[in-house]
Length: 311
Image 1: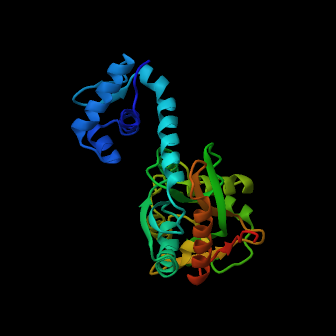
Image 2: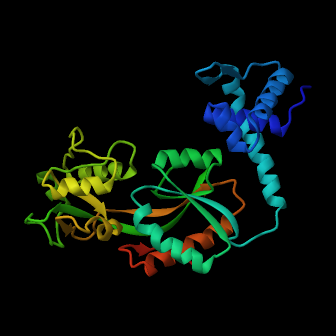
Image 3: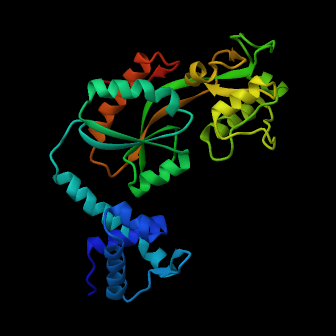
């Protein structure tokens, strides 16, 4: 029987994830020669070429792709054993947190202050990225938990709902809708709606609102952008309207010639929560972390409704 070690499997999994030997070595904390040796030994022991190497690219072979899920499972199982052997800790040590761009600038200031006060031993690092990239990072183990719009509907991941926020309508300041608190979503049919670029979950959520209202968004409009800040400036310039999460209004409307209108109840909105791997041992710790984040929403006076877990 071929002799296979966890070190060798971890090297293979890292190379497959990054498709780059230098990045893979950095990911698992070894030198590049050590990584290359581990992969070569694994291929020799299995008598299979797992990776094709060339000066310009690294490709996983068909045989490698067949074995990759088993290698990932084996590495995850060993990591779970190591985690299970560690003493239980409460919000201490490193935690890698992913956050999407339509949440990070509005939630994080209050969150970071609250964590510093309530969990001073937690070593938090923050990674901002689009939803699909954060989900991939969760699955690879590059981050521990992510704050995302729910549901993610992804196998292998679990969710803790934290709060609900409404969408509001952002318009040029002179719009006749500005200041209204009873706007019918059907009004969107008469507006030129600007959206974020592909890949942002807020774009998909806005499109859902439009479809439910029977409206068409400016999907092919060249005036799309990759950030809410840019979208707001386009709206201020009179190029259209957009949907904003209520938590973003205070920050994004600052210094902009912007009008805000609220939808009549029940207003369209989204649920925000923590997302984590089913294999993690930190479930109770993450539930406590979610509780801290809910309190941060209140302390930061964000326009959202916390969803408290039953005691």
